[in-house]
Amino acid sequence: MEISTANLPAKDKMTAWASGITSAYYDLSINIPDIHRFHGKLVHVSTDDLEISSLSSQPIQYVCADKQMRQEQDSFLLALPIHNSIEYLQQNKQFEIRPGGFLLQHGMTPYTFNNPAVNQMWVIKIAGNKLRQLCHQPEKLCLYANAGNHDNTVFLMDYIPLVFQQLNAGNLRNPHTKLMTKHVLELLSLLLGESQQVLHSRVDAVITAHLRRI
Image (cartoon, rainbow, N blue to C red; front, top):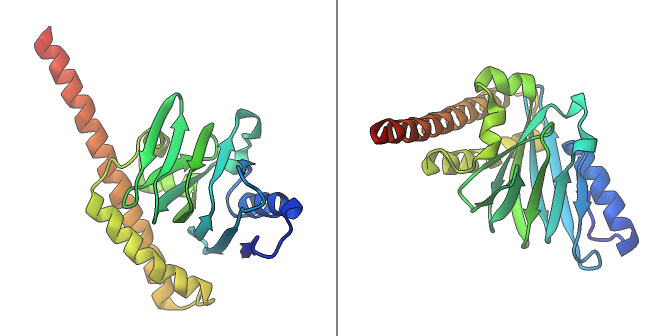
C-alpha cells in the first residue's frame, strides 16, 4: 500500500491521510497544523508475522483516545525516527525520542504522538499476541522510551531498509526474505528484552535505596 498527498487539494488531504493511517495501523485521530502545506507519504508492506512502514510527513499529531479502543487494536507499533525527534505523551508522562531511539505504542492504550517537524521514520507493526511471545508484558514498555542499548536500535534501523526493500519488491516467498523477517523479530525480542532488564534494574536500584534509608 502506498499513499501520498502530494497532488491532492487541501480539502482532500486529511481524509486521504486518515484513511491510510487507519488502514496501515489502527484508528487514530489526526491533527494537522497546516493542511495547505501538508505533505505526507506512507509506504506499507506486510508479512504474516509483521508489517513495516516508511512514513514521512510534515508536522502532525496522532491521538489514540479511549473511545477508539477496540479489540482489533491489540497491536503494537515500534516507531524509529530518522531525521528529527518525536514526542509522546501517555499517563501524564512525556518523552522526547531522538533519532537513534525507539518508541513502543499500544493500540489499546490512550496516548498522544506528536511529530513537530518534517520527519521520516520507520514503523513496525506487530500483533499483540505475537509480540507477547517475544516479550513479557510489552504494555509496560510503552511508558518508557530509549530504555535499551543505542547500538542495538541503530542496528535495527540499518537492517529494516533491507527487509523493506525485499517486501516492497514483492519477494514474499523468497527464502531469504523469510529469514530476514525472522531476524527482525529476533532483533525486536533482543531490543525489548534488554529494555525490560534496564527497567528492572532501575526499579531494583530504587528499592535498594529505600531499604538503605530504612
